[in-house]
Length: 143
Image 1 (cartoon, helix red, strand yellow):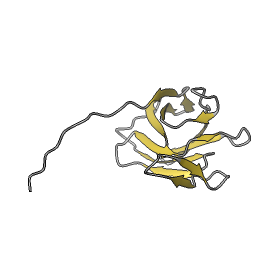
Image 2 (image 1 turned 60 degrees about the vertical axis):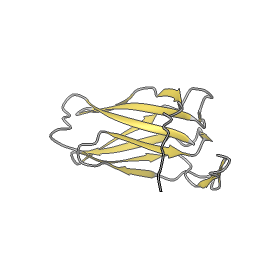
Image 3 (image 1 turned 135 degrees about the horizontal axis):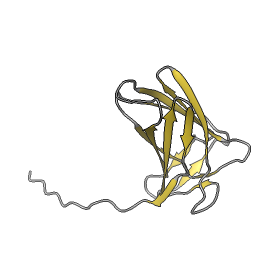
Image 4 (image 1 turned 120 degrees about the horizontal axis):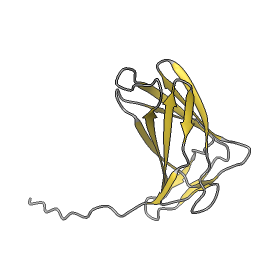
């Protein structure tokens, strides 16, 4: 699986403490497939994109989702729309550039920093990092 993270930042005229983010919609990704929990293998089973809606809890300014690894179709852009203070902001996200161009690769996290302002929305190039192993803890249970 691939991890996509969104960090929403305040720009000119935007104050998240006064008005909250409601939701965002990501378009351009294929979302239907299978995931084998034993082997970790994934497979897309539908070859067309479906929109993904992410709702925000009050005060939240981040969102993340797991997606199927996939090569992006040049004819279908990654469009993001965000609703803030009753206004819909839209932007086209840049495609990933590594480890393989135009592909969300398994085992990688893609972090997009998105700045909302009263003049529009700005999206930075994504930060792309391999997933790191988590912490290991030993637990004992006494019956």
